[in-house]
Image 1 (cartoon, one colour):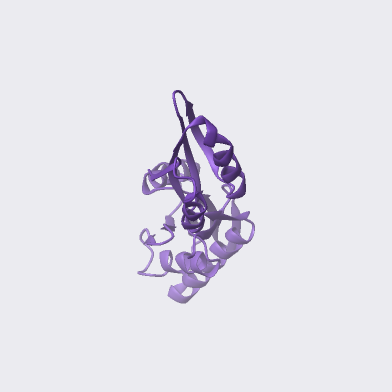
Image 2 (cartoon, one colour):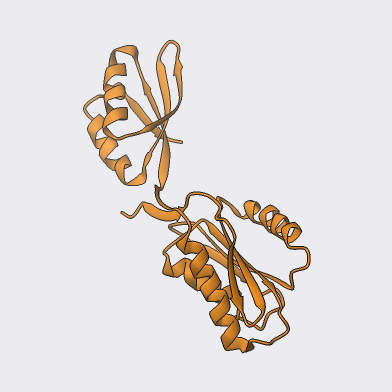
Length: 200
């Protein structure tokens, strides 16, 4: 079961590509949802108020990927798709790449535009810090005090992230664990009948 993916650690610094007097500025951002995108685009617009085009592509999700491209007035598929092609080439998701263009007075033609947007996106992603992340499932573990040691051992063994614990009459732990480990964890806990596992 594939539960790992690659994304970027943090926003990149601007990359500049010059092509026949046109200037292309590339930026990449890690994103978690579509609601992250518009505020980033607004910030970029305010950074480059006199730019002619603000083209971008993003991809989100792991098991069910979704993406969007935007040519922002450039000829169809001459900007957004070449940028998106680089997201695929680097095998990245949860990333937004924006390329801002200042027109230099010389038309580049569709082929020239495709090449310039692709190269800017490539240079931008080449300087990004790429990290591997994992899909996680949240579980609730419930037990009595005598079983607490077993739960703690399992937390360690399966490198679970302890989000919250409640110690009252009984113990309750909210944890996150790699998706591929959930089945193994449940199997390991089967002999301990007093420990309940619920998927949150």
